[in-house]
Length: 148
Image (cartoon, rainbow, N blue to C red):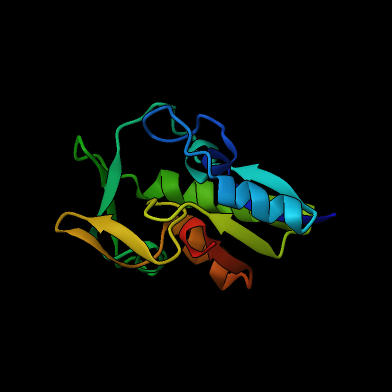
């Protein structure tokens, strides 16, 4: 079985900011039909954040911008989340390397995992999450749950 990183919430684990899961039958079918071994990750938990936790969104830039010090990610209480999200992304990449993952299936619209679109103050816009940006830079193939 080939290992694949998967956003833990998509597998049914209650890791989302609101303490719920986002079980995705298409993701589960995709993994099963291709005989893939899911490696569950939640970059936000890996960054030390509690579950549940206040929601966070970008005030400037996106995940790629954050790594270039051109982004800002804050929770609904106005606290900077940059350090925690970056730490979680680094731990997620470490897990990918330890397990030999070259592909990741990630939750779209997440400030950590989004492959295509993120939430900013002004609404949904093109961009990637913090962990997704780092994984992409490291050469992993990214698949959004919405791509399946």
